[in-house]
Image (cartoon, rainbow, N blue to C red; front, top):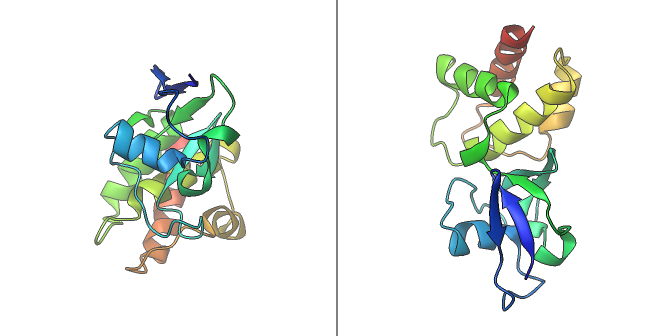
Length: 154
């Protein structure tokens, strides 16, 4: 029975869950954690971004068998770092979301960037956020919010 720590809580995944089951389905279907979204299913849109051991990962393309026993997984529901809080505050302040569907993945990617780099350039923001698609095309507001969050962390 695989044991994971999701948002700091121990989760014992049932032994009958196949190893090829994507983490996204474990989160959404087995644990009813719906903040992490299904977008494309092939790891190109970023709506399913979570952190595994602090690194942004696409949950739709990460099978259970690829996650080490006891791994720390953080979803949008558990994103409580100072970077995540700064990003969420900036998102609200600058009214980033339109439809909001991609926002959990966007926030997770942006917070992971700021955890590593408190003063990212436009190019570094673009690189870190590449692969996080927004159908509403709020990219200028996303970049502005990341810069706003970075200022608040300085």
